[in-house]
Amino acid sequence: MSAAGARDAVTHFVVYLVVIGFFKGRDAIRRLPALVEQARTGERLALPGPWWLRTARLLVGYDPWTRSQRTAILVVCVIVCSLFGWDDGGPFAAAILLSLAAVNACFALVALGARAAASRGPA
Image (cartoon, rainbow, N blue to C red; front, top):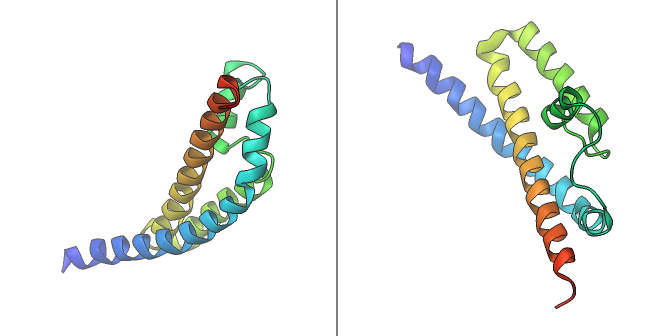
């Protein structure tokens, strides 16, 4: 009987991850051309500021398109976990945060690839 609760949490997490991942991915695909253009024309990959500010930006996210969206999502995660507890709100919060991390990782790889391609020059 104790495995039923864990199985329920994993099921909720997977469903949330698939649904949220789909919508975040769909939104991210629309922003890729602008990201590639920005990466090709940008001068620096490093973020300005002291180390603690750079670390905070990397953790919360620093692309200007979704800064307010990420803040709202973090607030929603805290509210959901506070209202429904970790057992019910935790899988939802984890799915949102992992989806954001996956989209950000893809953005970073695309930006690095575009920067590397631009530095090599036209083929």
